[in-house]
Image 1: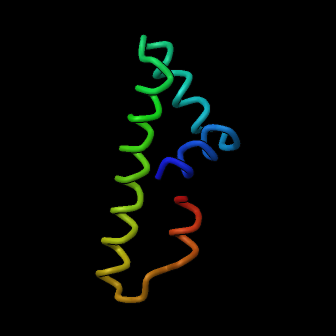
Image 2: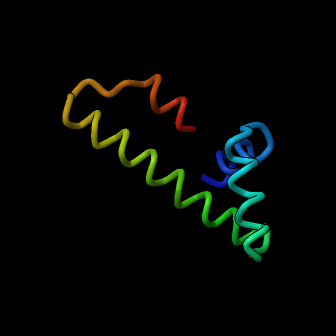
Length: 66
């Protein structure tokens, strides 16, 4: 999870915006990372739930979430 967070913070524009907003709210960089990890976990969990319902598990969605 930590590696995913670092890569997204470096390369993903929406993630950069999210982290900048958290820092502007007064959070430290580590706090912003913690918040981002929670967001990523929620995204992955939703994808896994859908995959479980469909019983097919779309690998492309998992790769995109990471």
